Structure formats: structure tokens, C-alpha cells
Length: 311
Image (cartoon, rainbow, N blue to C red; front, top):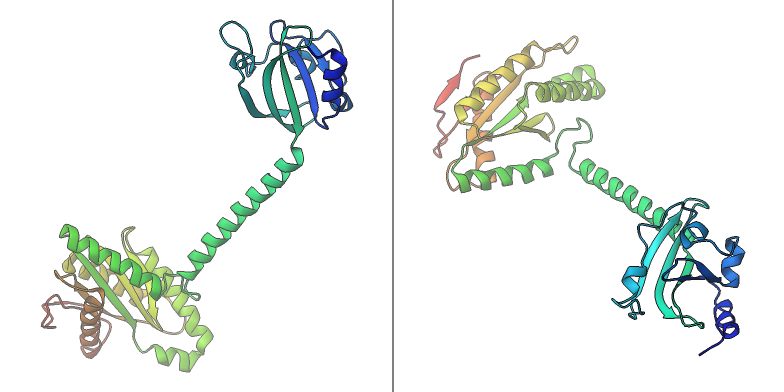
């Protein structure tokens, strides 16, 4: 059996705080030099008083885990972290049971101050969270038109592809609407491109304000907008288009009046997104050649308009 001087010499050589607790009576029977440097040692105190500055036994006491049914050391080692709110420090504790030099069963604890490590971990976690937010914001911005803050063409293509797949899978209706602002070049020529940009931004807001939650609107390019309407027949989409046409016609753009031509088509089994876009574009062409400021619908592959929505 090693005597107490050898135990103390061994433990004092370790640069981390070590304390030894009687497994039965919970009294602190020994602390090493490193522990004394960090905590004032008062002999005769219970471990929860000396170590944790508590009035009651610790709820997280590990001694029951470290001894067998007869109270002897079971060889188990437990490692856990503890925050000491007295000195605002984090510690990692490694604990096990052993037979002390006087024959009694004790628990010894090696306590390592990991406060700096925790600060680094917290800083890394905060940096990671901030980076994730910035990445999400960059992803969001990558999907938006810079001028109008609507979905850009890339995002519209993605959403349209998803809705076409869903329409085919569940045999549900899906319609799209192409909008082209009438004579918009004249706005730029007469009032300047800054005014033209302002008009586009205003119209983007108008479209968003008059759509349903299920609809997706975006800038298709130039003065063209695309609206994707899931769970919507061409007839329903046409009525929505007429609502938008009238709102656009009555919208106050200052000294100018801005109207739009609308081309609509619906999903037909086997359609690809580009097939629907071509039909909607043909419907838009018909609206332009019908005098503009009107809605045209094509819902068959022969590109013959089946309905005309009156202005």
C-alpha cells in the first residue's frame, strides 16, 4: 500500500486540479497543489460545499456510477463538463473510484479548466451561424432580380419545373401567365431609363399585391413578367389575369399610362416547362396583335386561342 506522501507527490505533480472525496461520507480528504491555487481549501467540508459551493448534495453526483453493489470501485471512468457560476469558469472533470492509502473507498476527480476552449467553441459556433445566415442571404439574393426584388428567371425556371412535375404526378392543373408591358420602350425613350426602372419596380409591387399566396411571380426579362399558378385552370388564370390587367391599367404612373398584354396557357399531360412557355408566348403574341392591353389564352397544342377575355 502506498503511503500518503507518495499519493500526494504523484497528484501534486499533475498540473490540473485534483480532489479526493470519501465515497461514503462525501468529505473532501485531499486536494492537490494545483487545486489549492484555484480554490481555497477548507478541511472538513463536504464535497458539495467545498467544490461546488452548494448547500445540498449535488444532483449530478457520479459516485453511485463509480462503485459496485458492495461499494467497491468498479473501474468505470466518467467524463463530463461543469460550469461553475461562482467563478464563471467551465471545467471538464474526469472521475473514478479507487482505494485510498488508508483503505477507504474514495472518488478522485481531475478538473481541467476549459473556459478558453469554450470561448473558442462559442466563437466558432457564432461564426458558423453568421456564415450560415450570410450563405442563406446570398442564396436568396441569387434567386432575386436585382431591380424589382422579384424572383429572377433562374428561380422561375426552377419553380416552374417543380410545378410541372407535380401537375404530371398528381394530375392537377397548373397554368402560367406571361405579361409584357405595352410600348415600354417609349417610356424609356421619353422619360429616361431611371423612370423606366421606377415603373418596373412599381409594377412588381402591384403584381405581388394582387396575387394569391400560392402564385409565384418573377421578372422573366426586360419588361416581361411570368406568373406561375399551381392548382389553377386556364379559366381561373384568365380571370386573375384580367384582374391584373385592370389594376395595371388604372395604376398611377405619374404622367404616363402603362398597360400590359397577357398570354396564358395551362399544363397538358406530357408538357415540358419550355413547351408551356412557348404556348404562353404565342398567346402573348396574339394579345399584342389584338391591340395590346388584353388577355389571350391558348390551351391546346395547335396554338389556336380557345377563349378571349374581354377588356
